[in-house]
Structures are given as structure tokens and as C-alpha cells.
Image (tube, rainbow, N blue to C red; front, side, top):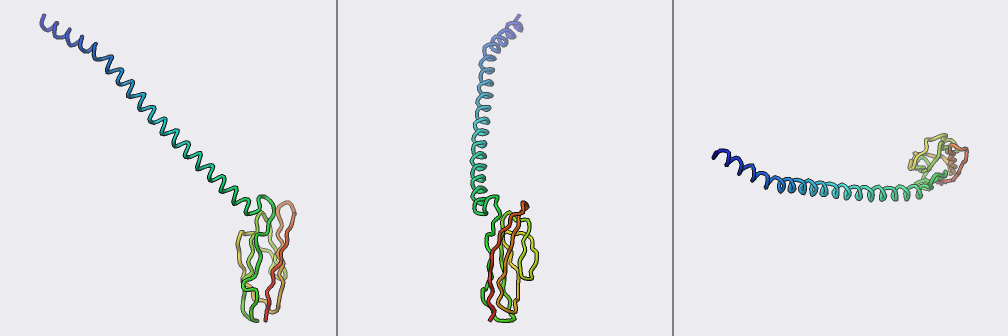
Amino acid sequence: MLKNNGESRALSTLRQVLPWTSALVVIAALWTGWVFFSRYEDSREVERQAEQKQANADREILDKLGGDKLTILDFYASPAAIHRGTHASLCYGVSNAKSVTIDPGLGEWRPALSRCIDITPSRTTTYTLTARNAKGASATETASVVVR
């Protein structure tokens, strides 16, 4: 009978403690879930802000490069005056071009945002850059090199 009485007390104590233990486990699970969810939401907000910042930076760069229209960003000679037999650099930058041609005599070049070509003109020369886009539109610009 003693054995039965001891088991009965243990069972009774277990029945009293079990609801509180279950409640604590549920509270701990809810708290843990809330912590993970709030951290997830915080990280999603940081990602949204980073994406917006990148979109604004991309839009600013696109505006500087002329959007989707054909644009000659620059075309110049450096130095603009040379002595006969020395060389200069003829530099260009285009946006949204499919082809680039430089006359006289330099021919076709690949479109680039920034490119320089070494030249050695024998006399003063004015170069003409013609850029064309896929739709057939063109833009031109000139740059001169004075030879002394």
C-alpha cells in the first residue's frame, strides 16, 4: 500500500506541475517565434532600403549617361596641339550607341563610355566622331589637333 501511496503522490504532483510546465514551454515558443519574426522583418526593411538606394543610384547614373537616348558623352584630343612627329590621344565616350566611326582615316570603333586612341597626325586635323544607335539615329561631334 505504501508503494501505491507514493506513486499516487508523484502522479498528483506531476498533474499539478505539468500544466505550468506546458504553459512555460508555450510561452517560450511564442517568445522565440516573436524574436525571429521581428528580426526577419527588420532585415527585410534593411533590404528594402538598400534596394531603394541602389535603384536611386542606378537612376542617377542613367540620367548622367543620357537615359536611353544616343549621347556623345565626350570627344576631345589631348593635347590639342602637338609638334610634327609626336602623338596625341583622341578620346571619346558614347552612350547607347551601336557603332562609332571616326573620320578622317580612323574608321570604325566599338562603342565605349571612355576610350582613347593614340594618333600621330602629320598636319592639323579636325576629326569627326559619328555614333549610331540600333534605331538608325546618329550624333556627331568634332575635335581638332593642331600640328606645329
